[in-house]
Length: 165
Image (cartoon, rainbow, N blue to C red; front, side, top):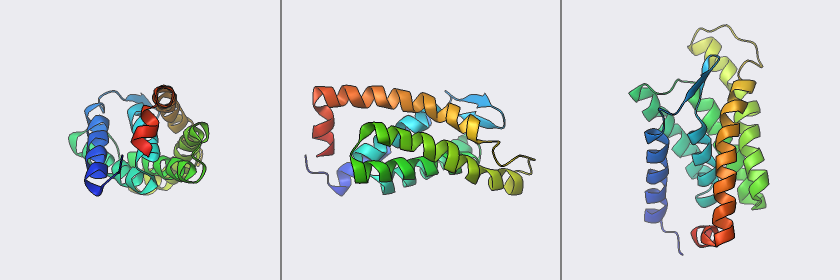
């Protein structure tokens, strides 16, 4: 299947809609909200559309979630770092397990460290540098497991190859 810009934008819109529609499925952990569906969407975007679309989609989803009251400003560093890292990992390796690990690392470690200045400077919260690593890991682990199961099922049935070629 040839992926035109129209096809990519439509797929991005669908994935953003899934992320926003499922935003009530969040779990508060510490000062952040665990939002596993965002991480599922990040991994699907990485595999289907690439890192650029993944990062832009994470930003748009975060803005919409904040506007409707189902997200916090901490959604930006976590989701965007995770989308970038897993998108780059898949782009250069085409390895699904590594892509899933890229989402975990990108969201929890990179996003967790990037959330620190956001929390301290923009939200006025007192926090340690490592404060967001564990909550972000919990959030991304759930979405990563769901994405891995879905992607391996799609790969096994041959649908993933049709979508990504």
